[in-house]
Image (cartoon, rainbow, N blue to C red; front, side, top):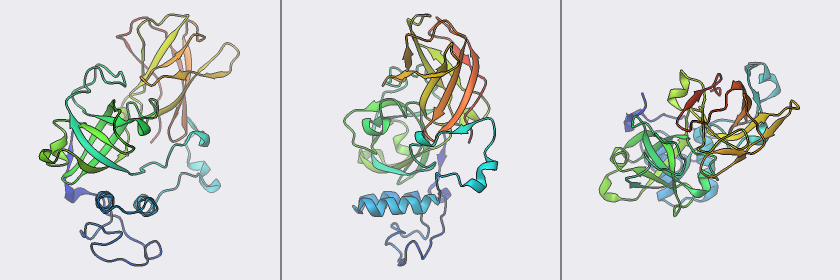
Length: 294
């Protein structure tokens, strides 16, 4: 299921630690909204109360309870069909971001991430320039939380005037997380796995004008956002393909294919996809053979 609404009561409860927060008072840090649990809704309240960056970071870490490192004793638990490139890790999985949420009517056609045609099964959202990061979070799947609840949304467009953390939600989605008459509200969000990736591999779309002499290729249906795409050259070495803000990787050195691609996501997870044909048809979606892990 893609478009869905999760009620306030379904927010995940997180046990609190006296060691992390020596003083626990109802309605105070870290239970900012006085509901008896510490969760993403407290991030919204904390931002409304103008807590310091240090306090917000501590609250975020507290809710996450995660670590991006892979201790030596856990290495055997990592599946052998993918590797980890720790130099590419953008943030721990589940990192919570906060900002302002607004709404607009675009994004299904002509969005800056160039994901047309975007299925109307998804709620769509535009992201600020800082978090979008030159296309790095194009096609990211987000869990967005406001005062009324939580929905999942696909990043298809840009919010150029927004500050870091801000999102511009599709107009019909906004009422599911906040009263529309407010117009601008505090929100929290985190990156979650794309639900359609559960039962399908990544796919590829070539840009208009692609030939064996110049190629623009886009990765789609990726479980998590892509930070790097490489192709295997004639010498058996992987070469990084330059990324553009509009969500295509472009090169004039790839040749006529078929290609072996190496894909790295923002968590440093790396998979290799072989025998991907070149296509001159910019409407064709070519199915790959692998998917990024959970």
